[in-house]
Image 1 (cartoon, rainbow, N blue to C red):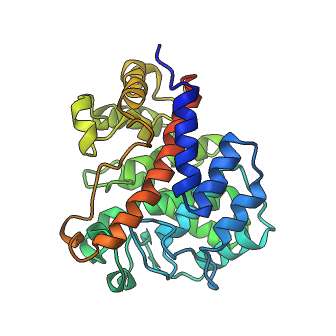
Image 2 (cartoon, rainbow, N blue to C red):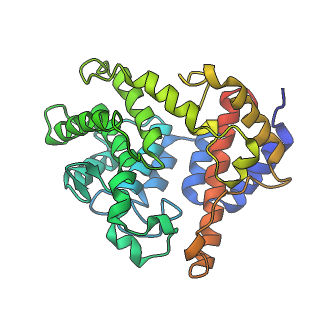
Length: 312
């Protein structure tokens, strides 16, 4: 079994300290150097707007300073990763206020892209497109619903909205249609959240785990030569051996772990597998910066994956 090794880890650590933003550095220190949650919260707060939502390029591919549901979900993901669930904290209370405002939401959930994205440097998929929102909103909505079912006040209108959207999501996955790039991940989160809260039967979601196993197994790209070009890797769905999808995919997970160790550039961190395509020439400088931010975030994610499987 291959392991990353101390020398490689120290090379990655040095790269992080030389290149990462404060938010990724704080997350690095929390994950690997016994850093505190307060440092992460302080860095994350710099991306929160007065309306309680998040923007300001916390999502490195979208430089819109305004709040959006997706970027706010990104912030929620960071809070989840550091196990911060204090609903009385000002940062958390402000998130509830943003979601309660109804901004960029409709009867089907929260939008993936928002109109003001078009005014700022961005990857092409962040250009506002109502037709794309019809399916790409699925993963954003599922992620926000999971957050609200866990932490919103049970008698609040926001909780009731999340509950109704959970029911709609469970109906939607039974029907043929495009779930978007984030949809399947969102449904995996929803299944886990309902199980954790003991709500699986209440929402009639007992069918979901078996269906998700089938969809996840089908989605994973098993030819590792395609991983260099944004092919879906097992780590998108399987973060640790505790994952319900691990048993059926152990071989391909171990293959990805080997792949990560083998493909890391010497004295560097892993690259990214995408660019801004048709927006590249217009925003070359911004993409160069975004790419470095993503490399820092990606390095942290990959090291956590390696660590969870005893490869660090």
